[in-house]
Length: 480
Ligand code: ADP
Image (cartoon, rainbow, N blue to C red; front, side, top):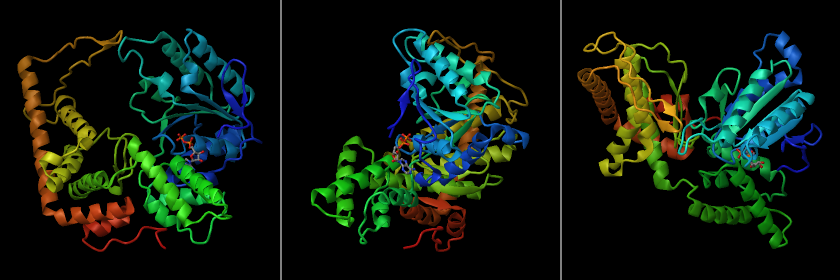
Protein backbone atom coordinates (compact mmCIF):
# COMPACT_ATOMS: atom_id res chain seq x y z
CA UNK A 1 0.00 0.00 0.00
CA UNK A 2 1.26 3.43 -0.82
CA UNK A 3 -1.57 5.37 0.78
CA UNK A 4 -0.97 8.62 2.54
CA UNK A 5 2.20 9.36 0.65
CA UNK A 6 3.02 12.75 -0.72
CA UNK A 7 4.77 13.39 -3.95
CA UNK A 8 7.77 15.59 -4.46
CA UNK A 9 8.12 18.22 -7.13
CA UNK A 10 10.60 16.95 -9.61
CA UNK A 11 11.85 13.78 -8.08
CA UNK A 12 8.76 11.57 -8.35
CA UNK A 13 9.90 9.98 -5.12
CA UNK A 14 7.28 9.65 -2.43
CA UNK A 15 7.90 10.19 1.20
CA UNK A 16 6.14 8.54 4.09
CA UNK A 17 6.98 10.31 7.30
CA UNK A 18 7.30 8.57 10.62
CA UNK A 19 3.66 9.23 11.57
CA UNK A 20 2.29 7.77 8.38
CA UNK A 21 4.36 4.62 8.43
CA UNK A 22 3.14 2.21 11.05
CA UNK A 23 4.78 -0.91 9.66
CA UNK A 24 7.01 -2.80 12.10
CA UNK A 25 8.88 -6.10 12.06
CA UNK A 26 5.81 -7.78 13.54
CA UNK A 27 4.02 -7.21 10.23
CA UNK A 28 6.69 -9.07 8.28
CA UNK A 29 6.46 -12.81 8.76
CA UNK A 30 8.14 -15.94 7.50
CA UNK A 31 11.51 -14.42 6.71
CA UNK A 32 13.39 -14.38 10.00
CA UNK A 33 16.83 -14.55 8.44
CA UNK A 34 16.20 -11.48 6.31
CA UNK A 35 14.88 -9.65 9.37
CA UNK A 36 17.98 -10.51 11.37
CA UNK A 37 20.18 -9.21 8.61
CA UNK A 38 18.54 -5.80 8.58
CA UNK A 39 18.27 -5.34 12.33
CA UNK A 40 21.48 -3.39 12.64
CA UNK A 41 20.18 -0.87 10.12
CA UNK A 42 17.52 0.03 12.64
CA UNK A 43 20.15 0.63 15.32
CA UNK A 44 22.13 2.76 12.93
CA UNK A 45 19.16 4.89 11.81
CA UNK A 46 18.03 5.50 15.37
CA UNK A 47 21.24 7.35 16.12
CA UNK A 48 23.85 7.33 13.34
CA UNK A 49 26.46 9.30 15.27
CA UNK A 50 26.28 7.11 18.34
CA UNK A 51 26.34 3.97 16.23
CA UNK A 52 29.51 5.13 14.54
CA UNK A 53 31.13 6.10 17.83
CA UNK A 54 30.52 2.61 19.14
CA UNK A 55 32.48 1.32 16.20
CA UNK A 56 29.69 -0.15 14.12
CA UNK A 57 30.37 -0.44 10.42
CA UNK A 58 28.05 2.04 8.80
CA UNK A 59 25.54 0.33 6.53
CA UNK A 60 24.95 2.34 3.36
CA UNK A 61 23.17 0.24 0.82
CA UNK A 62 21.52 -3.13 0.62
CA UNK A 63 20.00 -5.10 -2.16
CA UNK A 64 16.88 -7.10 -1.42
CA UNK A 65 16.64 -10.00 -3.78
CA UNK A 66 13.59 -12.21 -4.24
CA UNK A 67 10.49 -12.92 -6.28
CA UNK A 68 7.68 -10.33 -6.42
CA UNK A 69 5.33 -10.15 -3.45
CA UNK A 70 7.67 -11.70 -0.91
CA UNK A 71 7.72 -8.62 1.31
CA UNK A 72 10.78 -6.69 0.17
CA UNK A 73 8.97 -3.36 0.23
CA UNK A 74 7.26 -4.31 3.46
CA UNK A 75 10.56 -5.19 5.12
CA UNK A 76 12.19 -1.94 3.99
CA UNK A 77 9.22 -0.02 5.36
CA UNK A 78 9.46 -1.95 8.60
CA UNK A 79 13.08 -0.85 9.02
CA UNK A 80 11.96 2.77 8.71
CA UNK A 81 8.97 2.10 10.97
CA UNK A 82 11.09 0.50 13.67
CA UNK A 83 13.67 3.28 13.55
CA UNK A 84 10.94 5.94 13.29
CA UNK A 85 12.53 7.66 10.31
CA UNK A 86 11.06 8.82 6.99
CA UNK A 87 10.79 6.40 4.10
CA UNK A 88 11.33 7.55 0.52
CA UNK A 89 10.27 5.29 -2.28
CA UNK A 90 10.73 5.41 -6.00
CA UNK A 91 10.58 2.79 -8.68
CA UNK A 92 13.48 2.21 -11.04
CA UNK A 93 11.09 2.63 -13.93
CA UNK A 94 10.23 6.15 -12.73
CA UNK A 95 13.76 7.19 -13.52
CA UNK A 96 13.62 6.11 -17.08
CA UNK A 97 12.02 8.81 -19.14
CA UNK A 98 12.04 9.73 -22.76
CA UNK A 99 14.15 12.80 -22.35
CA UNK A 100 17.81 12.44 -21.71
CA UNK A 101 18.87 13.95 -18.43
CA UNK A 102 15.52 13.71 -16.65
CA UNK A 103 16.35 10.49 -14.85
CA UNK A 104 19.67 11.78 -13.61
CA UNK A 105 18.12 14.97 -12.31
CA UNK A 106 15.42 12.95 -10.53
CA UNK A 107 18.12 10.98 -8.76
CA UNK A 108 19.83 14.21 -7.70
CA UNK A 109 16.58 15.67 -6.40
CA UNK A 110 15.73 12.59 -4.49
CA UNK A 111 19.04 12.53 -2.68
CA UNK A 112 18.74 16.23 -1.90
CA UNK A 113 15.33 15.67 -0.36
CA UNK A 114 16.59 12.68 1.55
CA UNK A 115 19.53 14.63 2.99
CA UNK A 116 17.11 17.22 4.34
CA UNK A 117 15.17 14.50 6.11
CA UNK A 118 18.04 12.32 7.29
CA UNK A 119 18.26 9.92 8.97
CA UNK A 120 16.01 8.14 6.51
CA UNK A 121 15.64 5.30 4.07
CA UNK A 122 15.54 5.54 0.30
CA UNK A 123 13.87 2.53 -1.27
CA UNK A 124 14.32 1.91 -4.99
CA UNK A 125 11.94 -0.74 -6.28
CA UNK A 126 12.78 -2.56 -9.54
CA UNK A 127 16.36 -1.34 -9.56
CA UNK A 128 16.97 -3.47 -12.66
CA UNK A 129 15.08 -0.90 -14.72
CA UNK A 130 18.09 1.42 -14.29
CA UNK A 131 20.71 -0.90 -12.96
CA UNK A 132 21.18 -3.44 -15.73
CA UNK A 133 24.77 -3.81 -16.71
CA UNK A 134 25.89 -1.03 -18.96
CA UNK A 135 26.66 -1.67 -22.57
CA UNK A 136 25.16 -5.14 -22.56
CA UNK A 137 22.17 -6.03 -24.61
CA UNK A 138 21.01 -5.38 -28.11
CA UNK A 139 21.40 -2.00 -29.66
CA UNK A 140 24.16 -0.95 -27.30
CA UNK A 141 23.89 1.54 -24.48
CA UNK A 142 20.83 3.48 -23.59
CA UNK A 143 22.18 6.95 -22.82
CA UNK A 144 19.35 7.94 -20.57
CA UNK A 145 19.50 4.84 -18.44
CA UNK A 146 23.26 4.97 -18.20
CA UNK A 147 23.29 8.60 -17.14
CA UNK A 148 20.74 7.79 -14.48
CA UNK A 149 22.75 4.87 -13.24
CA UNK A 150 25.93 6.95 -13.19
CA UNK A 151 24.19 9.65 -11.19
CA UNK A 152 23.00 7.06 -8.70
CA UNK A 153 26.58 5.83 -8.26
CA UNK A 154 27.85 9.38 -7.84
CA UNK A 155 25.27 10.10 -5.14
CA UNK A 156 25.98 6.91 -3.28
CA UNK A 157 29.70 7.56 -3.30
CA UNK A 158 29.06 11.15 -2.22
CA UNK A 159 27.78 10.55 1.24
CA UNK A 160 29.99 9.67 4.09
CA UNK A 161 27.66 7.62 6.17
CA UNK A 162 27.25 9.90 9.13
CA UNK A 163 24.32 11.58 7.36
CA UNK A 164 22.37 8.46 8.15
CA UNK A 165 20.90 7.59 4.78
CA UNK A 166 20.48 3.98 3.83
CA UNK A 167 19.62 3.14 0.26
CA UNK A 168 17.77 -0.12 -0.21
CA UNK A 169 17.05 -1.46 -3.66
CA UNK A 170 14.87 -4.39 -4.63
CA UNK A 171 15.11 -6.75 -7.55
CA UNK A 172 14.19 -10.29 -8.41
CA UNK A 173 17.37 -10.80 -10.34
CA UNK A 174 20.69 -9.60 -9.02
CA UNK A 175 22.58 -11.35 -11.80
CA UNK A 176 21.63 -8.77 -14.44
CA UNK A 177 22.78 -5.80 -12.38
CA UNK A 178 25.78 -3.72 -13.27
CA UNK A 179 28.72 -4.90 -11.18
CA UNK A 180 29.51 -1.30 -10.28
CA UNK A 181 26.38 -1.23 -8.13
CA UNK A 182 27.62 -4.09 -6.00
CA UNK A 183 31.02 -2.60 -5.08
CA UNK A 184 31.90 -1.82 -1.47
CA UNK A 185 30.14 1.28 -0.18
CA UNK A 186 27.26 0.81 -2.59
CA UNK A 187 24.77 -2.08 -2.56
CA UNK A 188 27.40 -4.24 -1.00
CA UNK A 189 25.16 -6.50 1.00
CA UNK A 190 22.42 -8.72 -0.24
CA UNK A 191 19.37 -9.69 1.73
CA UNK A 192 17.62 -12.66 0.19
CA UNK A 193 13.86 -12.70 0.62
CA UNK A 194 12.64 -15.99 -0.75
CA UNK A 195 9.21 -17.53 -1.10
CA UNK A 196 8.03 -18.73 2.31
CA UNK A 197 8.08 -22.40 3.23
CA UNK A 198 5.11 -24.04 4.89
CA UNK A 199 5.88 -22.64 8.35
CA UNK A 200 6.55 -19.21 6.90
CA UNK A 201 3.22 -19.32 5.12
CA UNK A 202 1.52 -20.20 8.37
CA UNK A 203 3.10 -17.19 10.10
CA UNK A 204 2.17 -14.86 7.26
CA UNK A 205 -1.43 -16.10 7.25
CA UNK A 206 -1.47 -15.48 10.99
CA UNK A 207 -0.46 -11.85 10.51
CA UNK A 208 -3.19 -11.24 7.97
CA UNK A 209 -5.90 -13.22 9.72
CA UNK A 210 -5.46 -10.99 12.76
CA UNK A 211 -6.90 -8.18 10.67
CA UNK A 212 -10.20 -9.97 10.02
CA UNK A 213 -12.70 -11.56 12.40
CA UNK A 214 -11.88 -15.28 12.12
CA UNK A 215 -14.08 -18.17 13.22
CA UNK A 216 -12.84 -20.83 15.64
CA UNK A 217 -12.80 -23.54 13.00
CA UNK A 218 -9.94 -21.90 11.11
CA UNK A 219 -6.91 -24.22 10.86
CA UNK A 220 -4.22 -21.99 9.48
CA UNK A 221 -1.82 -24.88 9.16
CA UNK A 222 -4.00 -26.66 6.60
CA UNK A 223 -4.22 -23.59 4.44
CA UNK A 224 -0.45 -23.19 4.71
CA UNK A 225 0.09 -26.79 3.62
CA UNK A 226 -2.11 -26.33 0.59
CA UNK A 227 -0.37 -23.26 -0.78
CA UNK A 228 3.20 -24.12 -1.81
CA UNK A 229 4.60 -21.46 -4.13
CA UNK A 230 2.40 -18.70 -2.70
CA UNK A 231 4.16 -15.46 -1.86
CA UNK A 232 3.27 -13.24 1.09
CA UNK A 233 1.26 -11.03 -1.26
CA UNK A 234 -0.68 -14.07 -2.52
CA UNK A 235 -1.46 -15.08 1.07
CA UNK A 236 -2.59 -11.56 2.00
CA UNK A 237 -4.79 -11.72 -1.06
CA UNK A 238 -6.16 -15.10 0.01
CA UNK A 239 -7.30 -13.75 3.37
CA UNK A 240 -8.80 -10.75 1.66
CA UNK A 241 -10.76 -12.91 -0.79
CA UNK A 242 -11.98 -15.09 2.06
CA UNK A 243 -13.28 -12.00 3.87
CA UNK A 244 -15.10 -11.00 0.70
CA UNK A 245 -16.70 -14.44 0.42
CA UNK A 246 -17.84 -14.21 4.04
CA UNK A 247 -19.25 -10.74 3.48
CA UNK A 248 -21.13 -11.87 0.39
CA UNK A 249 -23.02 -14.37 2.55
CA UNK A 250 -23.56 -11.82 5.31
CA UNK A 251 -21.46 -13.82 7.72
CA UNK A 252 -19.90 -12.11 10.72
CA UNK A 253 -16.84 -14.31 10.82
CA UNK A 254 -14.44 -15.65 8.23
CA UNK A 255 -14.48 -19.44 8.49
CA UNK A 256 -12.58 -22.35 7.03
CA UNK A 257 -14.91 -22.74 4.01
CA UNK A 258 -14.25 -19.15 3.01
CA UNK A 259 -10.51 -19.65 3.21
CA UNK A 260 -10.71 -22.91 1.25
CA UNK A 261 -12.80 -21.26 -1.43
CA UNK A 262 -10.43 -18.32 -1.66
CA UNK A 263 -7.49 -20.71 -1.89
CA UNK A 264 -9.08 -22.66 -4.74
CA UNK A 265 -9.93 -19.50 -6.57
CA UNK A 266 -6.37 -18.20 -6.34
CA UNK A 267 -4.83 -21.53 -7.28
CA UNK A 268 -7.01 -21.76 -10.34
CA UNK A 269 -6.10 -18.24 -11.33
CA UNK A 270 -2.49 -18.97 -10.56
CA UNK A 271 -2.25 -22.16 -12.56
CA UNK A 272 -2.76 -20.11 -15.63
CA UNK A 273 0.14 -17.96 -14.54
CA UNK A 274 2.03 -21.12 -13.63
CA UNK A 275 2.92 -19.73 -10.24
CA UNK A 276 2.02 -22.64 -8.04
CA UNK A 277 4.61 -25.30 -7.89
CA UNK A 278 2.99 -28.50 -9.06
CA UNK A 279 3.50 -31.78 -7.26
CA UNK A 280 5.79 -33.23 -9.92
CA UNK A 281 8.02 -30.19 -10.01
CA UNK A 282 8.13 -30.17 -6.23
CA UNK A 283 9.20 -33.81 -6.18
CA UNK A 284 11.89 -33.26 -8.81
CA UNK A 285 13.25 -30.32 -6.83
CA UNK A 286 13.18 -32.36 -3.61
CA UNK A 287 15.35 -35.10 -5.14
CA UNK A 288 17.61 -32.53 -6.76
CA UNK A 289 18.31 -30.67 -3.52
CA UNK A 290 18.63 -33.89 -1.53
CA UNK A 291 21.24 -35.01 -4.07
CA UNK A 292 23.35 -31.90 -3.43
CA UNK A 293 23.01 -32.23 0.32
CA UNK A 294 23.90 -35.92 0.58
CA UNK A 295 26.98 -35.61 -1.61
CA UNK A 296 27.92 -32.45 0.29
CA UNK A 297 27.74 -34.35 3.55
CA UNK A 298 29.79 -37.32 2.36
CA UNK A 299 32.75 -35.78 0.54
CA UNK A 300 35.85 -34.62 2.45
CA UNK A 301 36.44 -31.01 3.54
CA UNK A 302 33.08 -29.86 2.28
CA UNK A 303 31.45 -26.88 4.00
CA UNK A 304 28.78 -28.08 6.42
CA UNK A 305 25.36 -28.51 4.87
CA UNK A 306 23.03 -26.87 7.37
CA UNK A 307 19.82 -26.31 5.52
CA UNK A 308 18.00 -27.63 2.48
CA UNK A 309 14.89 -26.09 0.99
CA UNK A 310 12.72 -26.64 -2.03
CA UNK A 311 11.21 -23.17 -1.90
CA UNK A 312 12.37 -21.01 -4.77
CA UNK A 313 14.87 -18.28 -3.98
CA UNK A 314 15.54 -15.77 -6.66
CA UNK A 315 15.97 -17.73 -9.83
CA UNK A 316 16.90 -21.10 -8.41
CA UNK A 317 14.14 -23.55 -7.68
CA UNK A 318 15.44 -24.99 -4.47
CA UNK A 319 18.49 -24.30 -2.42
CA UNK A 320 21.02 -26.21 -0.43
CA UNK A 321 22.89 -24.00 1.98
CA UNK A 322 26.50 -24.49 2.75
CA UNK A 323 28.40 -22.62 5.39
CA UNK A 324 30.29 -20.43 4.67
CA UNK A 325 28.72 -19.46 1.40
CA UNK A 326 31.17 -16.80 0.38
CA UNK A 327 34.87 -16.37 0.78
CA UNK A 328 36.24 -19.31 -1.15
CA UNK A 329 39.44 -17.45 -1.87
CA UNK A 330 41.69 -20.06 -0.56
CA UNK A 331 40.56 -23.63 -0.73
CA UNK A 332 42.47 -26.86 -1.02
CA UNK A 333 42.30 -28.93 -4.15
CA UNK A 334 40.44 -31.57 -2.19
CA UNK A 335 37.84 -29.07 -1.11
CA UNK A 336 37.38 -27.78 -4.65
CA UNK A 337 36.90 -31.33 -5.90
CA UNK A 338 34.29 -31.84 -3.22
CA UNK A 339 32.43 -28.72 -4.24
CA UNK A 340 32.29 -29.91 -7.81
CA UNK A 341 30.97 -33.29 -6.72
CA UNK A 342 28.18 -31.80 -4.63
CA UNK A 343 27.22 -29.40 -7.43
CA UNK A 344 26.56 -32.40 -9.66
CA UNK A 345 24.65 -34.21 -6.91
CA UNK A 346 21.39 -32.54 -7.93
CA UNK A 347 21.51 -33.54 -11.55
CA UNK A 348 22.61 -37.08 -10.74
CA UNK A 349 19.78 -37.57 -8.25
CA UNK A 350 17.25 -36.48 -10.88
CA UNK A 351 18.61 -38.94 -13.39
CA UNK A 352 18.87 -41.77 -10.88
CA UNK A 353 15.24 -41.49 -9.82
CA UNK A 354 13.40 -40.21 -12.87
CA UNK A 355 15.60 -41.44 -15.71
CA UNK A 356 17.65 -39.62 -18.30
CA UNK A 357 14.64 -38.59 -20.38
CA UNK A 358 13.09 -36.73 -17.45
CA UNK A 359 16.15 -34.79 -16.35
CA UNK A 360 15.23 -31.12 -15.97
CA UNK A 361 17.01 -27.90 -16.77
CA UNK A 362 17.22 -27.22 -13.03
CA UNK A 363 20.93 -27.96 -12.99
CA UNK A 364 22.07 -25.29 -15.45
CA UNK A 365 23.46 -23.01 -12.76
CA UNK A 366 25.17 -25.94 -11.01
CA UNK A 367 26.81 -26.96 -14.25
CA UNK A 368 28.01 -23.44 -14.88
CA UNK A 369 29.50 -23.14 -11.41
CA UNK A 370 31.15 -26.55 -11.51
CA UNK A 371 32.66 -25.87 -14.91
CA UNK A 372 33.91 -22.48 -13.75
CA UNK A 373 35.56 -24.04 -10.71
CA UNK A 374 37.22 -26.74 -12.80
CA UNK A 375 38.38 -24.14 -15.33
CA UNK A 376 39.91 -22.00 -12.61
CA UNK A 377 41.62 -25.00 -11.08
CA UNK A 378 43.35 -25.64 -14.39
CA UNK A 379 44.01 -22.14 -15.72
CA UNK A 380 44.44 -19.99 -12.61
CA UNK A 381 45.22 -22.02 -9.55
CA UNK A 382 47.81 -24.38 -10.99
CA UNK A 383 45.97 -27.48 -9.86
CA UNK A 384 46.49 -29.58 -12.95
CA UNK A 385 49.61 -31.72 -12.93
CA UNK A 386 49.70 -31.92 -16.69
CA UNK A 387 49.66 -28.17 -17.15
CA UNK A 388 51.64 -27.26 -14.08
CA UNK A 389 51.49 -24.19 -11.87
CA UNK A 390 51.03 -21.67 -14.66
CA UNK A 391 48.35 -19.13 -15.32
CA UNK A 392 46.71 -19.49 -18.67
CA UNK A 393 44.81 -16.34 -19.36
CA UNK A 394 42.12 -16.19 -21.91
CA UNK A 395 41.16 -12.54 -21.92
CA UNK A 396 37.53 -12.00 -21.34
CA UNK A 397 35.54 -10.84 -24.32
CA UNK A 398 35.07 -7.13 -23.90
CA UNK A 399 31.78 -5.52 -24.60
CA UNK A 400 31.97 -2.53 -26.83
CA UNK A 401 28.91 -0.65 -28.00
CA UNK A 402 26.72 -3.54 -27.05
CA UNK A 403 28.64 -6.02 -29.13
CA UNK A 404 31.13 -8.45 -27.85
CA UNK A 405 34.55 -7.80 -29.30
CA UNK A 406 36.60 -10.71 -30.58
CA UNK A 407 38.58 -12.49 -27.90
CA UNK A 408 42.32 -12.36 -27.88
CA UNK A 409 43.72 -15.71 -27.07
CA UNK A 410 47.06 -15.81 -25.40
CA UNK A 411 47.40 -19.57 -25.35
CA UNK A 412 48.31 -21.78 -28.23
CA UNK A 413 45.73 -23.95 -29.91
CA UNK A 414 47.29 -27.14 -28.60
CA UNK A 415 47.53 -25.92 -25.01
CA UNK A 416 43.97 -24.81 -25.24
CA UNK A 417 43.05 -28.35 -26.19
CA UNK A 418 44.90 -29.76 -23.18
CA UNK A 419 43.13 -27.26 -20.92
CA UNK A 420 39.79 -28.56 -22.14
CA UNK A 421 40.87 -32.15 -21.54
CA UNK A 422 42.02 -31.36 -18.03
CA UNK A 423 38.77 -29.60 -17.18
CA UNK A 424 36.90 -32.55 -18.57
CA UNK A 425 38.87 -35.01 -16.48
CA UNK A 426 38.32 -33.06 -13.24
CA UNK A 427 34.62 -32.97 -13.94
CA UNK A 428 34.35 -36.63 -14.92
CA UNK A 429 36.21 -37.74 -11.82
CA UNK A 430 33.98 -35.74 -9.49
CA UNK A 431 30.80 -36.59 -11.32
CA UNK A 432 31.55 -40.29 -11.01
CA UNK A 433 32.30 -39.97 -7.33
CA UNK A 434 28.98 -38.21 -6.72
CA UNK A 435 27.17 -40.87 -8.70
CA UNK A 436 28.70 -43.65 -6.61
CA UNK A 437 27.77 -41.87 -3.38
CA UNK A 438 24.16 -41.44 -4.41
CA UNK A 439 23.79 -45.00 -5.65
CA UNK A 440 25.16 -46.32 -2.39
CA UNK A 441 22.84 -44.10 -0.38
CA UNK A 442 19.69 -44.24 -2.42
CA UNK A 443 17.65 -45.04 0.68
CA UNK A 444 18.78 -41.77 2.28
CA UNK A 445 17.99 -39.97 -0.93
CA UNK A 446 14.39 -41.19 -0.84
CA UNK A 447 14.02 -40.40 2.85
CA UNK A 448 15.40 -36.89 2.44
CA UNK A 449 13.20 -36.17 -0.57
CA UNK A 450 10.18 -37.33 1.43
CA UNK A 451 11.14 -35.07 4.32
CA UNK A 452 11.50 -32.16 1.90
CA UNK A 453 8.08 -32.86 0.41
CA UNK A 454 6.64 -32.71 3.89
CA UNK A 455 8.57 -29.87 5.53
CA UNK A 456 9.80 -27.98 2.44
CA UNK A 457 12.79 -26.77 4.47
CA UNK A 458 14.85 -29.07 6.66
CA UNK A 459 17.47 -27.98 9.15
CA UNK A 460 20.84 -29.28 10.26
CA UNK A 461 19.39 -31.60 12.90
CA UNK A 462 16.93 -33.15 10.52
CA UNK A 463 19.72 -33.66 7.99
CA UNK A 464 21.79 -35.32 10.77
CA UNK A 465 18.91 -37.74 11.46
CA UNK A 466 18.52 -38.57 7.80
CA UNK A 467 22.23 -39.19 7.28
CA UNK A 468 22.21 -41.56 10.27
CA UNK A 469 19.15 -43.34 8.84
CA UNK A 470 17.13 -42.39 11.91
CA UNK A 471 13.52 -41.18 11.94
CA UNK A 472 13.46 -37.45 11.20
CA UNK A 473 12.67 -35.24 14.17
CA UNK A 474 10.11 -32.50 13.70
CA UNK A 475 11.49 -29.00 13.25
CA UNK A 476 11.07 -26.36 15.90
CA UNK A 477 7.60 -24.82 15.95
CA UNK A 478 6.11 -27.71 14.03
CA UNK A 479 3.30 -28.92 16.19
CA UNK A 480 -0.44 -29.07 15.88
P1 ADP B 1 7.65 -7.07 -2.81
O1 ADP B 1 8.19 -5.71 -2.49
O2 ADP B 1 8.61 -8.17 -2.43
O3 ADP B 1 7.17 -7.23 -4.21
P2 ADP B 1 5.57 -6.32 -1.00
O4 ADP B 1 6.35 -5.97 0.20
O5 ADP B 1 5.12 -5.18 -1.86
O6 ADP B 1 6.37 -7.34 -1.89
O7 ADP B 1 4.31 -7.19 -0.55
C1 ADP B 1 2.98 -6.83 -0.88
C2 ADP B 1 2.05 -7.16 0.27
O8 ADP B 1 1.99 -8.56 0.50
C3 ADP B 1 2.49 -6.56 1.59
O9 ADP B 1 2.05 -5.25 1.74
C4 ADP B 1 1.84 -7.52 2.60
O10 ADP B 1 0.47 -7.23 2.78
C5 ADP B 1 1.94 -8.85 1.89
N1 ADP B 1 3.19 -9.56 2.26
C6 ADP B 1 4.22 -9.85 1.43
N2 ADP B 1 5.19 -10.48 2.09
C7 ADP B 1 4.80 -10.58 3.37
C8 ADP B 1 5.39 -11.13 4.55
N3 ADP B 1 6.61 -11.71 4.53
N4 ADP B 1 4.70 -11.06 5.71
C9 ADP B 1 3.49 -10.48 5.75
N5 ADP B 1 2.88 -9.94 4.68
C10 ADP B 1 3.51 -9.99 3.49
